[in-house]
Length: 231
Ligand code: DC
Image (cartoon, rainbow, N blue to C red; front, side, top):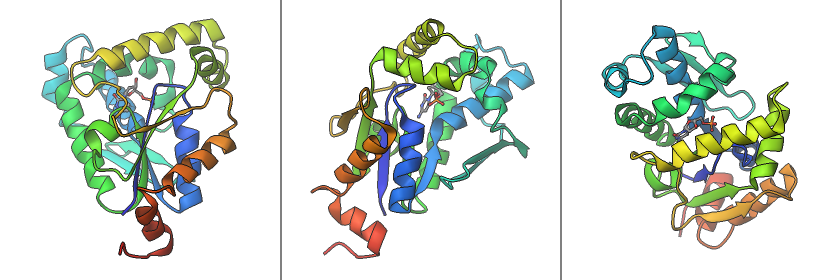
């Protein structure tokens, strides 16, 4: 069962690359950031104060998440409500780092992610996949890009946001995500770093597929693609 862990900061291209690699190799796709965003949406809607870690921890077990893993139609709902749109609003984006820093929230979502991963080959994108969620993943990629390139990409996605304001917001989130105590954004020692700054999306996908077919992971990839067992 092939697991490809795709970590990296916001705007490094994780989502597009992960979906493209999943399609190329016939794997499922899991966006773990969407899960943190969904819990954040729920906390905001419930009026849970996001400056109160204990209050968030106490309610971390309540929202019921349902996550689809088709790379062509990823879906996410909370308590039966489709939240694919609402989790991309500025309100949720501005609040998600605070929620993702709560250990009880992480524990619950990591367990759910491991359950989903356990059912078959998958590309999983996030911040702590190669380090915490799937430390035994056959392929670990750490995507990076210059701060300018990441801000350019994000401001194109968010209509009306200036590049400089987006760059400042990314820097703030990177800092919060990398310095939190529980499972911070980190490159696994055995991850392959791919700098996407001057590559097109299809070049990055080709590169990741090439890495996945490389020496160490070759057997797992062959098994996923052709159904062959390891010798
Ligand atoms: O990838 P994204 O921007 O949708 O992620 C939203 C937030 O969730 C991000 O600020 C960090 C957090 N996150 C995390 O802490 N761990 C993950 N595995 C994925 C995302």
